[in-house]
Length: 73
Image (cartoon, rainbow, N blue to C red; front, side, top):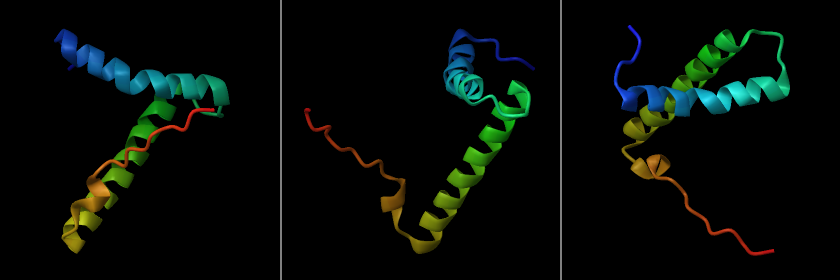
């Protein structure tokens, strides 16, 4: 079923919009729905691998974001 709450629709939009823009910029030989679905699958596989590796090594540092300040130009 489709997301019914406003928050769920906003979350889905926030996750898919950048991928649709990427699809429009790159124009791969695949329709946008399959492109977004495959990118979600690839991102989920990558994230699962990172999580599994962190669990196996008992080291959560790979899960923490790295924040860096931008240097002024």
